[in-house]
Image 1 (cartoon, rainbow, N blue to C red):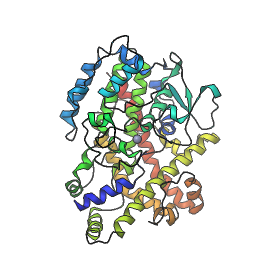
Image 2: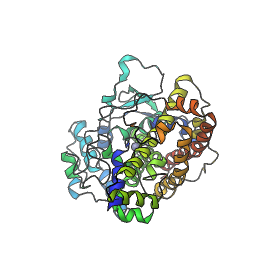
Image 3: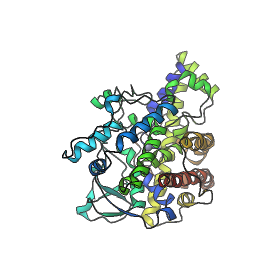
Image 4: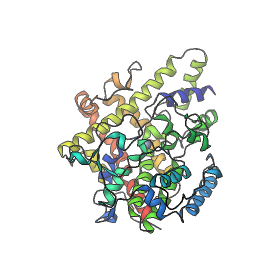
Length: 441
Ligand SMILES: [Zn+2]
């Protein structure tokens, strides 16, 4: 149990909002030029209109999802019968249809779900079309780089842009307020129980069990901290792919692509080593030693380990976001991270994303890369950021980690990019597989 306490403390301390920062930045590259999306256009449609159009089909579809999750996910908390989808009266307003749907799929009923597109850094948006953060997210503050443009219902829009925008959206509050200790009525109704990991005091952390999956830890860790298995990331991926396929097959392509982007978000989260391993760089033996020290009243080693892991997670996200934001702003299409995301050489055209690909393949790849990436971060950045447990990067909004790595040790930055390349290639490859899975019947 003490190991459990140590692990829990790490999860409390981590910046749990994002895996890779700003998924749209990655998705624009990953899907760039994908033949399956070429020329595909659709019309924006409110969620209420979509639900109304599919109201007769949704009960059976959601029942199939529920049966699949109960059979395939051993730690899944069954959806209570009281939350079964029930169509409101035909004449009910959009908001009632939206609410009925969100309750049934156990997604934050406060979610904004506006019609919008994310635009690239530096891209001009007419002032009347500009949306602020609060129009798309329930969170109080978000990524300073993201900018949004309003869409009108019926407006023509490309599938590619809908997916790329939607691939960031699950980080905008969709999975918040859902736990028994979230302090919301919906959190009591979902029967997910109390937050298994993450700290309810942090605005973001309620989404952690939906966006992380520790599927490849040692048995000792699971024995001590069984709650780490309570991840809903596979359930989200499966649900959104099923909704996407149904919508695409029945003339509701806008929501088909938006659901595809939502499914993609969780897959992309699993490609991040710090979302696939609890403590990269710290072996099980070391973790138990740290915990023993803690048990003996020497809390220093545990606190130091927590701070280091948290800081490295922050550094790698900051580095990725900084490089990508700069590349978009300056039109550098040859940014190495972009080239890796666009690299289709490892794609298998006939291979799609299966029900357990997230667990068996995506998160296994990320977990396998975690220790080496963790070690490389120490070499690529000044020790103040990666090795000094006294450093607190939790509010590190304006630190330019790309410039810091460049100035610190150019050779080690090359080595870091070499480590990130296969991770970005995997994110690109799996993102494209999600699109192919959505298009399959
Ligand atoms: Zn996420």
